[in-house]
Image 1 (cartoon, rainbow, N blue to C red):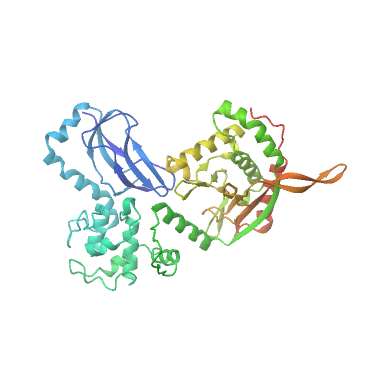
Image 2: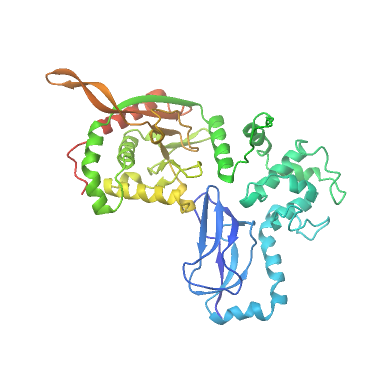
Amino acid sequence: MAQTEILLPKMGESVAEATIIKWLVEEGQQVEADEPIVEIATDKVDSEVPAPEDGVITKIMVNEGDVVEVGQAIAMFSTDGEAAAAPAAAPAAAAPAPAAAAPSQEVLETVTAPLATAGTAVAKNGPSGRFYSPLVRSIAKEEGISMEELEAVQGSGSEGRVTKKDILAYVANRGNGAAVAAPAPSSNGQAAPAAKVESAPKPAPAPAKVHQGPKVTAGPNDEIVEMDRMRKLIADHMVMSKHTSPHVTSFVEADVTNIVNWRNKMKKEFAEREGGKLTFTPIFMEAVAKAIKDFPGVNASVDGENIILRKEINLGMAAALPSGNLIVPVIKNADRYNMVGLANVVNDLATRARENKLSPDEIQGGTYTVTNVGTFGNVMGTPIINQPQVAILALGAIRKKPAVIETPDGDMLGIRHMMFLSHSYDHRVVDGMLGGSFVRRVADYLEQFDVNRSLW
């Protein structure tokens, strides 16, 4: 019988852990290769882990709601069809295994004692029915947090579940008197040790105060809508960006008549040959990639007093989701694509973003971001930098306007397709000359677009 472990796969350079959202299989179930077995969530993306090959899930080693590190075993898998009989034949012997395995790796890395140490254990489900993972229960027990307190903690996980981040932030605020005056009334009658409170992450209290803003009282006719997990992440990221980077925005108006005419001429042929729409986005992305090569200082990040100049041009394209939230899939090495390649990758990422099918790696590693506010009818905007990048470009709506046309025979008025480009940049490292010259160069590439250009 060939038994192997199914590990939480690597999902991007900066992704270290994921939350188990929902198991799609049961112990003893036969699965096929690439069949999804579990749903996971990391930062903004929910994704699925597939079965490595045909076989049987012999043991599920972590529970829904658990936070699991990349490379950690989440299930046992057998390529022998008869292995399914093992759990069924001896359920009593197999039952304790998941309970022992699930917290062992996560809990021991987070707290100094396992779940079975001093204090009263926290129930798996609270009076409200909300599920608490072994990791959260262990931290609550170690810090002397009663079930009544735990039930009051706002959860950012699936279905309002309390995550590791939520409980640690609560512990930090609790220690500062923000949530509870004193820990004495806990169910085990013990006060939370001062050392434990101090060991909680130091940055937790400050962001909570900054991001939440002043206390606001709802009126009798007002509706209170709790932020979902993605909206909370976006809020944190935007406020952090404004506090990190002094934002400056430069504006340029571009004549994109040649682009509009060329796209109108090519979009039908493109749809017939490629099976998708030819939008303006790949044309804009090509111009941005060219301008970055001319002005590499905008393709950078700041590390303390050092500037990291990125050698790869990985363009993020901000996309609005049906939920109203925002996600930024990344076109890796955008400067290496031709127009057809850019068009296809843009369509693919945009479609899968709307369907929530992006992998975590596809929203990581961006070096510069482009957002199209023109899709909402806006003529310009002042976008917020997508940290740790140092600049972002907003594309305004394309509108017909009267404009002066310069000709060898003199100037004349004509109807042209015009748009504004808004370039926000980090004034710590990008000065007005660089930030303004870059967006002007993007406009130049757009205005000089060859209307006779071939796609293939």
